[in-house]
Length: 301
Image (cartoon, rainbow, N blue to C red):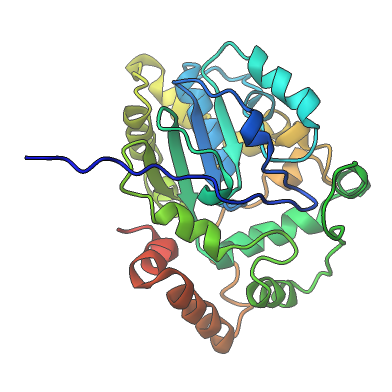
């Protein structure tokens, strides 16, 4: 019986905007035990980083996750700062990306975790993230040299209008949504990729953590596991937001408490009209296909 050779993803393009510079992946020296946590954004990224950190560091309660697990393709700090910092890490690295697969250098020896979440829940979280951003956030994203494309602007408080523009302009004012989901879904068969879903983490956090640990070949110390789970709950992360939020939360009014906001789904239900929901669901079917759209909506595969 012959086994078909694995066809690994190949980088075919770059992504640049006020947030991203995908070229940094070309210069990153990967390690055989690297872990990459990939999402669209506001899909449970920080939560997954916290889970991995707790599994790697035996439930230590003072792990500065945002420092230890940087967003590789974020333009700031520049690569002259970021790459040496990554090279200097001596622990097992767990990196973050918001890129689609074809804008990333995909390594056969790296373990990838991709987390999905219903786009409506994503936008409700994204709007809070955006509207609470302070002047320092805009200064870093818009004024740091190297930005390609228009600056990011302040949103209004009209969250339904924000959602509808995000939907009709595919991710405005951040980056395309559907291609991000679809690109990772299409390689779900690869042995070094594990698909996760926000809903699954919420429904069974201990069970999800055990599955992640098994995939990453991290042994679980049962004497520490209860603490590890506790440190990954929403309440614990919100109470310790200064060590879980990026840069301790300095880029948002209200600090890390604003970044670690609600952690809930369905807040769009009393804001969107039946027509709004029908439009979103039709686009999900069109852009992703029936099976992927169903997975994105609820997590089941």
